[in-house]
Length: 92
Image 1 (cartoon, rainbow, N blue to C red):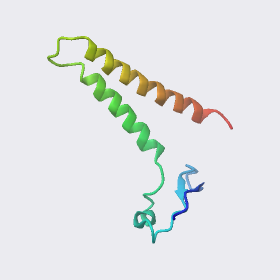
Image 2: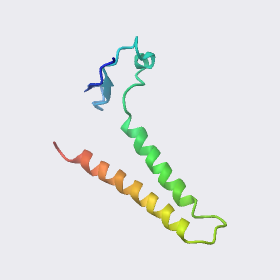
Image 3: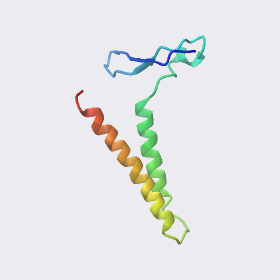
């Protein structure tokens, strides 16, 4: 079984990216660096999904229940993104 521990690497820019210690023989994509998590990609995807949910308010539906679920989902995603941003800035 492949190792699941992650270690941070120091790059020239000091981004502190997460690198995996996965064996490339077991996970071929690990050789290209595709086995780690990309927080930036997840944050961008979260904002895009929140905007798409709000864009769905424009339409030909007449009920307001759909609007409540769309707004509630978008607000929940934005709250998670803001919480993540605040927690990342706090010194540990």
